Structures are given as structure tokens and as C-alpha cells.
Image (cartoon, rainbow, N blue to C red; front, side, top):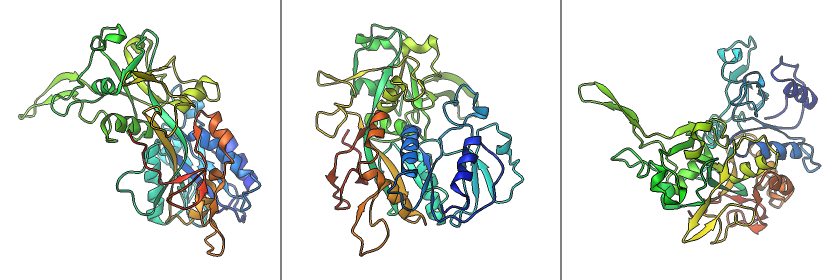
Length: 420
């Protein structure tokens, strides 16, 4: 999005939270509104800040990293790790300034009084971020420029959609105090999490069916919100499909032909925010199971990010008798990698008027749309963000010739999901 406000004015606006509109002033750079994944929000925020002041950013572009959630007055226990508000300024390619406000804020009710300003909640998760970016592409505007994504390209993505892989992560099951289960096989995870389409329940509902756990009692299953890329990836690892894991699970109500209802057992897993285990009560911990991004778990364990693990311990996956946990050594593209390893992506839409500006930050190619200029790497694909990527627990990609672009790059265009 091309600037209508000076950098310093916008910086002070964002720092102060949601404030009044400042007078527009001419500026030649571009705003890049980045939306979507919770998993990569913090690393992309750090990468965006680095790019904003990089000497190679000769166009003076500014990345605006919109959080997936916002906290009401920054004090509510659920979302307080995220800021209380965010602003994506208007420009010639996006006629509306978007103020992102938390649920419950009076702004959500439309109390703005300013023409050309919309107030909404931000896209929460990879799927919601992609939807927002493609929506801007369809509309031919640059209101949503880059989608943070921890889920891979689908089988039928639009021809205008580009997924730029820049790092590796993994998703692992986690346990809590009172549960010393050393490992689970993929088949055991399937039996715990996947509901049968006929019986409407998982094959295993009690820890007594997992002898190594030494536990008895109902399994307390937790899943991430339906738009979560981490949740979609974990579902794909277990089932081969990104379909929400609660889809086939009985909802606790039977509806009879005459319209009467009766209460039955609810086999749906409890839905909570991805990479945030604070909603799991102490009483549930010994019998709870969930999953997390390894990068998020690592960064939280090292106090790079707020610690939301709630005592979560990474479990091992038993692969033919070999117990494997995710780590910087096991997260790779080899045949012996941690089995639930994945790429992390940024999504662009070539219909976006600021597509080339986005490419200069997260992609590779003809960055200035000039046939006389050789193709080249954008900032994130040029090894300039690798230390930041590692700090947040993710594994940077190696420099390889990208089969899709022919460019020697630290990014891969439209990298397919690693075989699960």
C-alpha cells in the first residue's frame, strides 16, 4: 500500500494504539499489510522490522504486521500477548484505512465517526489470512498484501496465488504434568484424534487403551481453531486431509425424525487458540493431549516469546521403534526427519497492485518488472533474515536452485507439503 502518511506519523500512531487520523502527506514508499498465522506472527514481525530499516530496502517500503488476535485494553487473560490495536493505512490502491480492534471494543460497533475508516477484527490463522489476501487480489486492491501461512498449498490453488517457503517447522503432540507417556505412534495419535464417520467418536477415548501411559480415565483432547494452519497441518499428518478434526465427531445432541432431541456423549475435542495452552485447566492436565509448533514451543521455552506452554512437554513419535522428537537437528527434508515437519510460507497474489513490493520482501523473481534486469532474490530469500528465523525456533532453508524459478535462493516458490 503506497504511503499517505509519513513514516514517523504512522510509527507514533501504532505505538500509541488506536488514535485519531493524521493529515496525509506524499510519500513514495509502499505499505505491506501482513495478516494470518499465529505461528509466524512474531518471527514475521521481527523480520518485517528488520526489512523496514535495511539498506537494501531502497524503496522505503514499510511492513505492517497485523496480529491474528487483539486484546481488549491489553489486559484480558486470553489474548494479552498480542497488542491492543493495529492500523493498516489507506493509499491509492486501498481506499480505506483499516483499524483492527479487539472483540468488545466500542470501535467494533462502528463508533469511528471518520469517513474512509473501517473497524474490524483481524484474520485469525493461516486460512483466514489467505482468504484476506485473495480477497484483495480479486478486488484489485492492496489492503491485504501478504498472508502468513503455516499450511501448504492445496491441490487447487488459484493460478495467481504464490506460496513462498522460507523456513521449516514441525508440529508435535504435547503432554502435561501427571502424564509421563514417553511416545506415541502415528496410529495411536490417529486413534485418539480422528472420529469415525459412522460411530462419530475416536477409536480410543480412555488412556487405559495406551498401556505406556500408565493412566486411566477419559482422554482430554484439545484442537486449535478451525482456521489454524497448525491445526490443518496436524489434521493432514493424521488423515491426509486438512479437514477440521472435529468434523465427524458427535456434538452431544441427537436429533430424531420427529424433531425431538436427546443429550448424548459429546466427542468433540475442546477448541482453543493454537500454540497457547493456558486454557487447559490443572484438573485436566494429567489426561490432556494437544499439539504445538516446535518453533513456538522453543521460543517460549527460551523466553523469546511469552511462555504460554502451561507446562507442556514435547512427546516423541515412535517411527518403527525409533523415538523421534523435533529439534534443530531432526527438522529437515531428509528421509529420517521428524515425521511431522513442514514448511512455513508467505502468500502473495499476483493480482495485487503492490505484488512486486511484496516480492521484494518475501519472494524472488523479476523484482522491478523490467526484462532487462536479471531475476534476483528479495530480502527474505537472500539469507538476510536467517539469524532471526533461528532465534524464533525455526530452521532456515538451505540455498538451493529453485526448480520453479531457476533462481539460487533461500526460498522455494510453491513448495509442496513434505511427504507425511
